[in-house]
Figure (cartoon, one colour):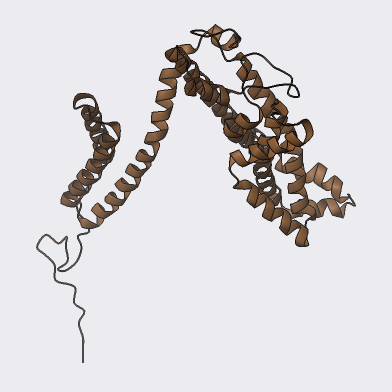
Length: 361
């Protein structure tokens, strides 16, 4: 008894098996997706400028139009399977662009309004005797650098030593308790850190105390958990083979940590510290409570009030006085300077990570 093999019956064009999916469907032009995205974006901008719509509904309408057009076009040309893939890709891309919209809006607003006061007086004068236009942020910049520098000096040694203990020595209940409290500190509101520092200095100096050192302590409470976490993760990435090789040469553990482990993890630790500084340098609430506000220069963190850029910007916008426009210009200028400082710190973190990372070959 013989049998014969049969193939599925096909359409005359030999492309689509009956009941199957086409294997040679058409393709959209190579630049179809980006061209459609640009066209939808331009349509949203036209609605914004010409129809005087708000930017948010214009962006939402442009994103929806992009997704609908690219899906319909792909379904007509490429078929439902490829169209579904393009639909998901378009939806993800649109969601990403919508997420960028607030960031772009904030940057555009701060730059356009803050650059008005970018002159020599703004960076070299304080607010002593200024009641109308003029004045500058010199005292606020110096206060920011002093308070943040002191907070870094407090936080980095404590954070690094804590991380070294947890990774290299910590065992049992004490290590678990430290890890738990570090996790708790990571999530505390910044105002709680400010109230803690204020209460601590009230116990030592009496009610109503305001000084830069109190602000540095408040910021260090926020920095320490970040430094601990970043340093801990970097130390865990150091291969155990390096430690074992050092121990095999009869090198003590403390010297192994100092000479082998820390240099290997230096790039990641420095990056984590830099990002921790960028995270706290713009804090306002704890510094309102601890450091206060002053119009003049004060370079002594242990004597009197000290102003930072974030607090200066807040007060200029919250209490503009009779010359409101001048106060608003100073507030936006201080905010722009603060954003630039944070951006520079992030670039420094990336540069440190790239320059001091262990060479792989």
